[in-house]
Length: 291
Figure (cartoon, helix red, strand yellow):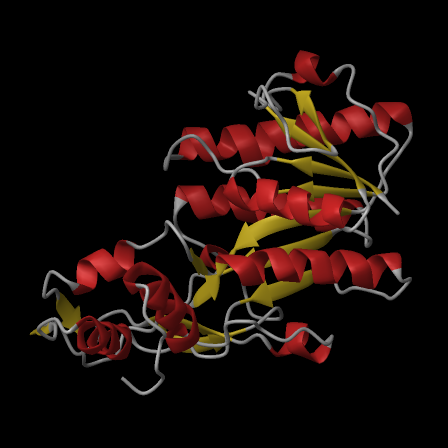
């Protein structure tokens, strides 16, 4: 089994760590404030990657590094601290020891700047306009140029248990853009973990990975469609139509074919599957498709 470092043990990082420990891997989680009572089999290293000195005693003999950090704030300073300064501190620490294990950086579909409903994939131009997404894109480029063994995984909007903003919004009869359609892209939290495990196992089996994968479900549905379905399923009034200009932004549509061609199959391939299960758990009733 592999010796693995997970940099950033928030919600997804911790669940990934538990999954890998259960599979027999030797997992270390790097976290600023590790829990007082860690999960059985999971080791923690207390460090702040934005402060190089806290990394001095971090081991470097890992066979895989996952970088799954979330910045403290939604601003350029917070994102640069993690994706530029923090990443550089970690890379310098490994370089000083003469080791360079393969990395898997969790990125975001926000690195795409397309806004007119275009389909995007791993070959599409990634030129974001926001300062936060520019920091993520800089981290991608830093790693991919450093070694062909490093991989970037771009998640679209993550949802799942505890991530119920859309459900709360659907209950409030929101005004939603209908024409032109505004496309939404999502991935269930469990699929995030499953994809990370899938790519690790692919690599450990000696199979080659591309340097970039886009992870989003099979159905980049319009926001109007999703909110109407949620309202009907929740027995709430439908959303109202938000009047917008004919040339209003339409976001983009994420194509997941490269990941599926590698053999991955989504546990939640569309919003009905994911949100249907969330609603059935909340209500305690079985979910019936087609509501």
